Each structure stands twice: as structure tokens, then as C-alpha cells.
Length: 634
Image (cartoon, rainbow, N blue to C red; front, side, top):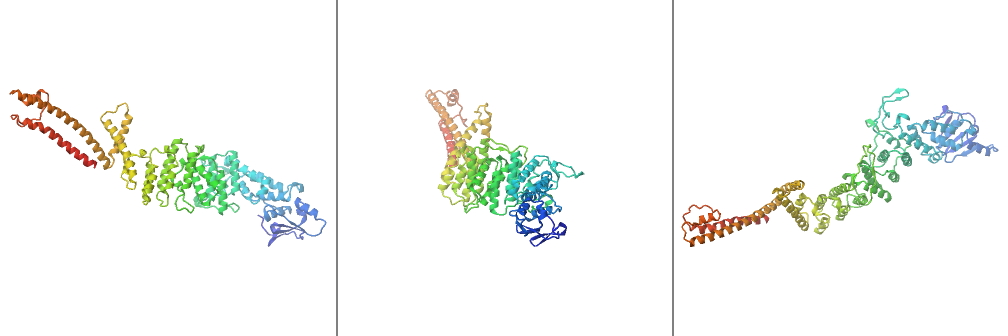
């Protein structure tokens, strides 16, 4: 901060500093192993602490030796104070004003020992310059980390935090430009005058994240305090969540890498900023971030929470932190995506994916009453719409079914894990069990060594009445399913087919009342699905049609037999009367029957032949239909 050499009035030789005044030194001050060889009068006239030490030792002619323990700011800060005592010009900046102020307070450099002393000058600079500029306030807050206890005592840190919180709520163009220290060189609020010059620079007015990058250089403790101060001031939750997400992605591995401004130019981190480098620091960082998370819900926010949970499992954070993250995710599980749920196993387990945490998240979703509200609708990235409970259940059920299907290919996945995941949701959450059937089919395909008993236990979670007709058709021909399960599927499929065919035929015959057009349409759709079925369904339908034809034919045969009996009676009575005009054909006309025309009507004995012909002709097609039906059913 102060160049060494004759121009500054001080020179350095090794670890010692000397004043170039030409007079021998009569006081030595040691600060963190660095010795300053100075003179009593300049120091005593400005520093109350050194003046008291001089009063106590003024009876001795020996050189006064002082050791300043835990001097704030170290040798660099004491050098600035010493130069000020000698009357040399010192430069106060946002980087050193906090440490200089703490050092002046330590040395008791108040106005009692001279008007305009270092303590009042540093305090005036801090209030008039530092707190009114975003960049300087960030730098001052960062530089307060080495002297944090004393800076807290002097309320310097609290003032910086309040000033930053107020600037975030205010128009950025009112408190200095440029704003971003390490990011894009832009001016907020569009083209503005800066020192009387029209810069022409612009910033995207729709974005409110211009301050995310700057505060990401703060240490964990300062960042946590700043976020809490902003919460108390009423900053919008989506902005706070965005800042937390940005900070987490920058300092935690796996959540994204930070990239600087435009054009791919990477900015360097300030030398005094804290970047967690060890596992313990990252664990502390993650646990601190978890406590700062707002109780809101959003799609991007849910994805971030799942990523944070993945990092927490890698770092093996406390169980309390894990449970809190799982609870937060469970309260908005309907907004999660499948890829974000695929959390690998980082323990000694042979399974590829961590199904235990997903199961726990589902339990939180079912058991915990979600009172979370979505972020503000004006937020584009974190916007989410509230969903009814039943709709949320269906979304989560579909998500879990897809999750089971995705992890089913893991050869080390146990059947009990599949069953626990499937049964974690209530039965009312699934209108159809096609997703469960698909997941189990993939699991059976990847685990061909399973016993039928194990397969049957897994299949018990499926409600066959909730399978669609396509799923039933697939299951009835699936050789990976146990025989007992296939029989159950066939039974329920037969019920579905019988009901659908009956209603479809009734609809086609016009037996359904026209006052109910909706069921007819539904039946038509069902009939369309049946027509698109495979060959087995076609055979069943042909059997149903043949059965209806046979019933109609049997009734017709009965009618013909009755007519034939009447004809025989008439013929017998006509033969006994020996009436030449009473031919069998005339008798048939009298009773209103039509006989099949014969090639010759002159042979009366042909009536006996015609009497046996209709029955024989009727029995032949009946046998042919019966044989056809039996073959197709077999």
C-alpha cells in the first residue's frame, strides 16, 4: 500500500523498517515479527496507546520497546498509521479503510490527540465514499475478513451489509457506475451521463441479477449475513434464491462452473476473496447454504435442490442437512424431472442409483402437507404454477414409474427396492397401471434369473383392472411373466373384451338410447382399439359372431321343423280322402308355406324325399359352423 524508499520517508531492510529522518531511533514497535525503528515524539503526539506507554517508562533513558499483540491489519496497516503520525500523505481506499480504521481505534488515534486524527479521517472516508458506492462497499466488506471481530465491534460490517441491501432495492444508476467489478462492463438503466460524458452503455433492464456475481466473492459467513440482511429488508425471494444458486454453483463442485463476462474472457478472483478449497470448508458451505434457502417452489429451484442433494451425498454432510434437503424436494416433487432424480450411489452399495433417498423424498411428498407457494409470477426462470393435490399425485406417480423403468436395467437392483418405490404412493395416484407394467417388464428382461415366486410378488403391485387393452394384449403374450399372472391378465382381458364387444354390438344395432351419445362415442373408440388388436383378439371376436349366428340358425331350424310337421299331417289327411285335387303343393299353399320348387311336380312320391331334404341341408351348415368354431377357439 505504501511504496518503500526515500520518497515515502521509510525504508525497509529485511524485516525492519527505518525512518529516513536522520535522527537515531528511540522507540521500536514490533508487529507480527516486523520491527519498526521510530521516534517517540511523532507517535506520542498522535497515538494514545503509545503515549500511555511512554508515560509509564519516561523515567528510564533506555529505548522504548513495544510489542503490539493482534494488531488489526498487521504491519501494512501500522505502516500507514506511522506515516500519518510523521505527517506524510497517506491514501485511503476501499481496500484498506476498514483495517486502517480498526488500527487507528487500536492505537487510540482520536481527536483528543490532535484535530483531524486518523480515526476521524478514516471514519469520514468510510461514510462519505465507501458506503455510497457499490464497488467500494463490496471491497470494504471483503477486506474486513482479516479484522472481522474488531470491525464487528465498530459496526463497520453491519453498515456495509445494510448499504448493499439498500442498493439492491434501489435504482443502480443512483449509486455509481460501473457496477459489476468482475463481470460485464455495462451501465445500469441504459445510456447515462458519467462525469458529464454520455457513455452510451446499456444493460438489460429486464434482469435483476447484476449483483449476483459481485457478492459471490464474499466469504461464506459474510455471504450468509448479507442474505439474511436482504431477507430482513424485504428483497424478493426469487432474487435471493438466484443469488444463492449462483454462489453455490461457483463454489461447490458439480453445480456448474463460473464463467466471466462477455467474449469468453475469464475474470480473476480477488486475492482476498474466500474460495472453499477443502472438504470441510465445502461441507460448512453447503450446510450454511441449506439454511438460507427460501421456502418456495419452482422448476429450476427444484432442479437446483436435487443437484445440491447430490453434492451433499458426495461430501457426506450431516444427516440433518440431508433430511432438510429431501423434505424441501419432497414438498415440490411434482416439478422434478427424471434426469435430476437419477442420483448415483456414492457409498459401498453395488446398486448404480441411490433409491433410498428417492424413496424418502416420495414419503415426504405423501406425508408432508405442502404449504409452499410458487415464486413470483414475474420471475421467468423460477416460475411455477400451483397444482391440485390429485394432479400432483398423478404427476409424481408417472415420474416414479418412469424412474423405476429407467433404473430397471441395473442388474444389482433388488426386487424389494422396486416394490418399496412402487408402493410409496397411494393407490389413487395411478389411474392406469401401464407405467408400472412397463417398468416391471423391463426389470424382468434385465433379470431373467428371477424365480416365478419373486416375479409374482412384484406383479402383485399391479391392478390388472387398471391395465389398458394394449397393455393386456402385450401381457397375455409376454413369456417373461409367470403363468399365473398371464392367466389373471387373460381373465380380466376377457371381461374387458366381453363388455366392450357387447356394448359395441348394441351400439351398432341401435339398442343404445340416443339420449346418451357420449357412451356410444366411447364404445366406438373401444371398438376401434379392439379392431387394431392382434390375431388372438380377432379369433375371439369371430367366435362371438359365430355363436350369435348359431343361435339364430337354431331358432330357424325349430321353426322349419314345426312347419314340416304340419305339412306331413296335411298330406296324410289328403291321401286318406283320395281327393285328386288335394295335392301336397295345394295343401302347402293353403297353410301359407312355400316349398322349394322341384324340377317335376308330377311325382307325388317326391314329397317324402323333400321332407328329409330341409333337415339334412340345415344340419350340414350347422356342423360346418360348429367345426369352424371349435377349430378357431382351439
